[in-house]
Length: 113
Length: 114
Image 1 (tube, each protein chain N blue to C red):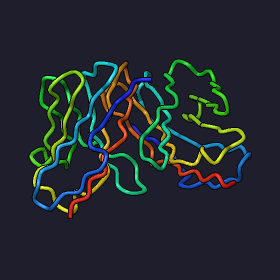
Image 2: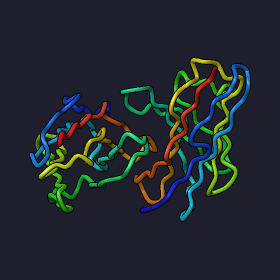
Image 3: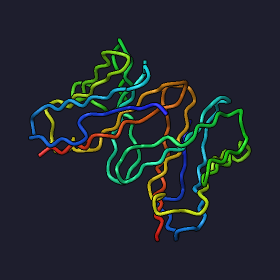
């Protein structure tokens, strides 16, 4: 079975704090893709990153960084020096090529000024 | 990144009427589009997969006669909510693939059925 678990329902931080959003996935497939999407209050999902199962290199994009560890089936997302504009719901997702993407329940991030 | 538009962004209708929502990929061709439904504070629920030139594949529990999907071209898919009822009120989101496995999402349509 394929599954994505985002155990943190809500996280609240103060601006400039670093915050890590956890994502744990389950799949028996050896080839798969992992994603992070951001959903701000406006509702539109914004694509942040895609990582395939053969590429375990961590990635950094500005204040965002991702840590992919196959050994623990995790794909965690860290925001450094958080800002109020980072407040949103963040979804981790898994795609094994079966034309269906499995989404986690989402983590709601509140960044207070 | 690839751009997906959705129209309308908001719709309010009376119970019993039908509502059509359009999803367009603006700068790429999408052989596959997806329709999701999202309830407040919940994750996305896949309703159906729309394939250009063929019938849509519906998820278990989704009534295909209630939610009609037409993928008429490589850049357009439509979702029609037929004989809408208040329980159909929700946020509907479409997405399209521009490359293997990457979906880009439309801005969503908020439907309120009175």
